[in-house]
Image (tube, rainbow, N blue to C red):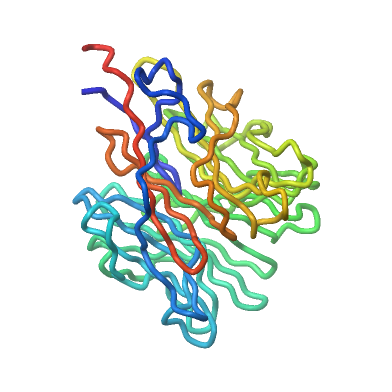
Length: 374
């Protein structure tokens, strides 16, 4: 049996072998290396006048799948809340499980991010917004996502706080988020707060990206050994949005200069909303994968309303990147894709996107690399 060393990010965990040489018998195709199953399963179908957005998946040790998303189904006064659903059959069917946000009666709760704690607790970060008041909130479940309680407030502001991305680095809980609080010096920057007591208390805010010419947002991150990699969308590459990456080798004390991950050749087109995953092997270099939505193949219109989902990969720690491969070549508005590893031993993955007024899951498989000891 091949051995893998998996790293966890705020949004996705993915096992990927990305060279044809490492995948004997798997021919290259327009879809890249992933063999996608036909059809998709539905997490939720919103009724007319309602919607569900921004899905994120988490696989629990007991085999259950959780999906978190924001929705106005069941929300009061036109607001949105965070709903968690569960699947007991590997994502084929779903049922609502618990509401994970608090304060949504008077504000919009959105942008959920899931992480599994060392003790099996489920942590869920989200943003809570009402006019002139912005918060990054944290909820926790001690019963496998069946119920949630409020745990803490990660950050507060008056200009704009968005898109938390949660995960663990050793015994610290980290939350990255997009902040407009330092405008006009930084139009929007990626900030970090960390907790050393399981999310109860938080250390002072750290400014991670520092580009006065860019509106940086939609952070996604992963840990490989002692390195932390962070991907985000930026606005300073000549396109409406492009994907950039930075990394830290000292626990987030210092960060590298940004590197370009992907931008469309047509400067009118965008690549946005990245999701980052990482794999470290016992003998070879780490592999980084970034999925994102892009309108570059749409000849009729531009913008996040006209995107499909692609991915690129790096085999050298982010120094160079592949061309882009389709993940889901169907155009839907604002797909905000998430990925999760559903079966490490067999390289099975699941993709979830916003598909109109539905949230859907599509399953795929990437054959694992051959066992070097066999």
